Image (cartoon, helix red, strand yellow):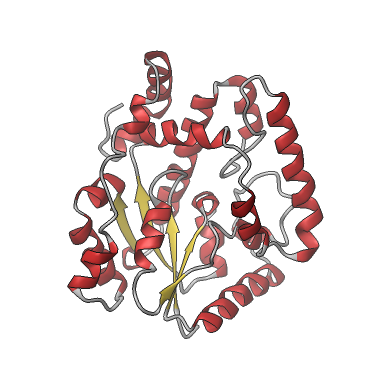
Length: 286
């Protein structure tokens, strides 16, 4: 590769979009013009019920397809650094690293309870046609029928659901369907966050530290210029200080604690109980 792939890893609602957009403000840095490219990552393995892919699933044909998509887009946009952000990748970091061993990673973590409060809303979100059309552009043609039926089925489920939620949203972790039957939606979001963070951490513990830049969401939004400067330096992305200040001018810390406030006392207790160990690992209150 004559460009550097940079993969942002993080659970849903952890600031991954914000971080991607800020980095793409710099010359020679870019990403796909849609929210995520999970359709590309899943090609060749679309029948898998979850996003927890193993290294063995990175077969030669799968690697060839994904790498071709990376290479074509980087060449088309004349990029020196290609940023990739798909939250489901937090469930399959070893698979990603097998496909793109040249990649460097940014691992962003946010208070899990805050993330739960935000993610719950996404499970109940209204239909967003422009958003869907942007992502459809990057669905392999042979996979369109599968995803079309799956998406329609999820919308039909939402129409009849007592909770007015989709049948699935976000990274599909092992045991998701069982969790939806057993737990409240808030608790499912908590388990989703925890599984994403724990599997990512397990994978990164086995990788060289120079491939990983660690970021705490709360630190970034509270001190964006210094945090962005650190990230750019660790990734060897050329920048000017004035440009770094401009790139984060819209970053705000107003969302810190917002997700927690969206939960009532019972929900907060249930979610905190499920997440206590992982929250403590990253210095958050349970």
